[in-house]
Image (cartoon, rainbow, N blue to C red; front, side):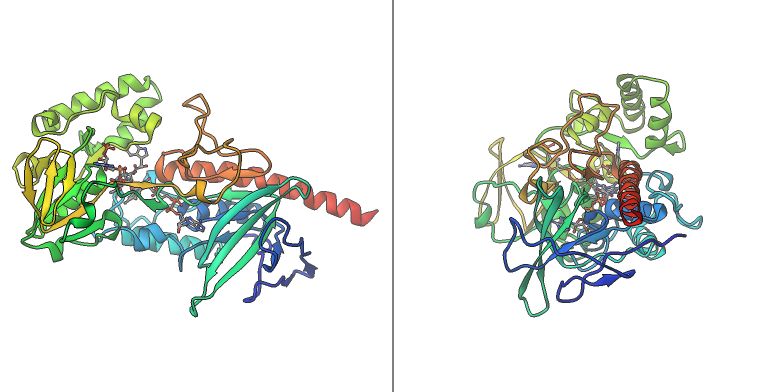
Length: 438
Ligand SMILES: Cc1cc2nc3c(=O)[nH]c(=O)nc-3n(C[C@H](O)[C@H](O)[C@H](O)COP(=O)(O)OP(=O)(O)OC[C@H]3O[C@@H](n4cnc5c(N)ncnc54)[C@H](O)[C@@H]3O)c2cc1C
Ligand SMILES: NC(=O)C1=CN([C@@H]2O[C@H](COP(=O)(O)OP(=O)(O)OC[C@H]3O[C@@H](n4cnc5c(N)ncnc54)[C@H](OP(=O)(O)O)[C@@H]3O)[C@@H](O)[C@H]2O)C=CC1
Ligand SMILES: O=C(O)C(=O)Cc1c[nH]c2ccccc12
């Protein structure tokens, strides 16, 4: 496997000599005057999650250099530090592999988070991806005169001193994820609630909630699986539902629902596939609306495409809703010291509240790009055609993992972005070789 060149900076962020070539200093134009600036030969990739790793691995395959910057202390922070113990991939493993490397054959159809993490670590090692860790990208802007992206990172060292570094590269890959920041709604009286309140990203297991009445706000995959886990640990979960949700069995006719949907989409329009999924879901699960889970007007695949809202792929919560072990309650109107008041006027006491209210991207907080690629909420701007996904913006800007299509979509974005960048990098190499031979 060709290893290509790896960008490097010394501990003090000064420029390091590599492969006999000294990187030039581009000055700190527009950035912090005192901060060192490292000019990179290859792209700068923001984020060392599955998307960042996939694009780095593919660049490696093309023999092109890259630099990955990651705010946490290791790769795959979401999967390592922000997910619960019982989590498994909810799509079969063939739909969750990153480019170039299949899951080991001994992995189960739905790998556990530990299996997946093992895979990601070995993936990073195999392609010699060594991200610059504990560097949060706080600003990225395109310097037109220099034709370079300027990227500012802030590092918090063990002595808690912040070090600001500026990088410059012709290419910027946004791989910071659709789930970079937690969403916690501002509900009236939230600060008055005296019990424990946490976001689903902080939940690990129901063990410490044994015997407690727990309000879980949100009925996405996280809310559902946490309610299931709470039940299995002897807690009493109440799930607050605001709008509706599509619940689908994870499997139908002995095959994965997702796999069946992907096959049908090759032949049928999305609306028809949705109708089929809902028909089978009704046969297998019954009428979810009867139990307080209204179905959205748009079908499960269509709503995922248009809004990014994922259907729930049921791994056991549904039967506990039907048996009354998980109780559905309305949207929360306000919190009190010991419980919540719902929009129907009812009040209930709770020992703890879990906000399974989802995530958002953090792209608008650091990327300056005139809204060409991202909306103000940090979502990918629609291309206008649902069959055409966007992975490239102007001036050497790329995004990987923002198409709302999970790991499969991230892999597809990574292949395209890396091939495009590698082609351009090779052109610059060729041009440099031509100049030096004159
Ligand atoms: C609980 C859960 C389960 C999921 N299960 C599945 C599944 O089974 N199948 C599936 O296909 N998808 C699933 N997904 C979707 C999920 O988005 C992908 O699995 C995957 O993690 C996306 O990879 P990513 O690299 O794009 O984002 P992330 O995994 O979020 O990685 C982004 C990285 O960027 C870093 N970062 C963010 N901001 C900055 C910054 N400013 N500076 C530097 N670094 C930064 C983060 O620390 C993180 O390491 C799940 C999501 C969640 C939340
Ligand atoms: N096993 C797996 O592979 C798992 C995968 N995932 C994936 O992770 C991603 C995130 O999932 P998840 O964490 O469940 O987040 P989601 O964004 O999917 O769901 C958030 C939930 O919170 C509700 N909500 C948000 N704001 C409020 C509010 N102010 N008041 C009441 N309810 C509110 C939403 O309701 P509303 O619709 O009304 O906005 C929705 O029910 C998804 O892609 C999901 O598929 C998650 C867990 C497990
Ligand atoms: O876990 C998720 O939400 C994912 O992003 C995986 C995924 C991509 N496309 C889908 C369609 C239906 C259910 C899950 C997914």
